[in-house]
Length: 102
Image 1 (cartoon, rainbow, N blue to C red):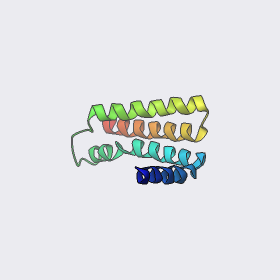
Image 2 (image 1 turned 90 degrees about the vertical axis):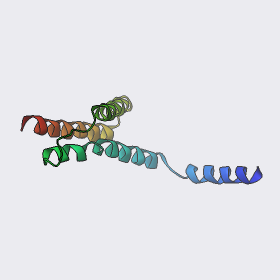
Image 3 (image 1 turned 180 degrees about the vertical axis):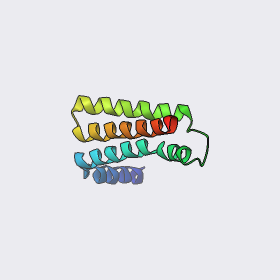
Image 4 (image 1 turned 90 degrees about the horizontal axis):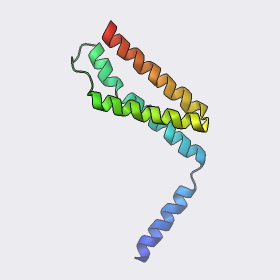
């Protein structure tokens, strides 16, 4: 049991060294990864490599999560996240428009 407590204390000390900037960077990278998750499927449809769109439920969940991140950023007045998420919405909307109207 003491060994587990020692490991726990070392982990807590390690993560105490991270600053808010590190946490914000990780959050920013996670938003980019979430936004990028549907783009390969959109490109595959645009390149006629497949005729199947990404599943609607996954796309809606990703967009819902991004919308919640966007609202959080607006409340916290986090300009970097607002711009990043807004740009992500714009790119995905453009890709969808290209798929359906071109």
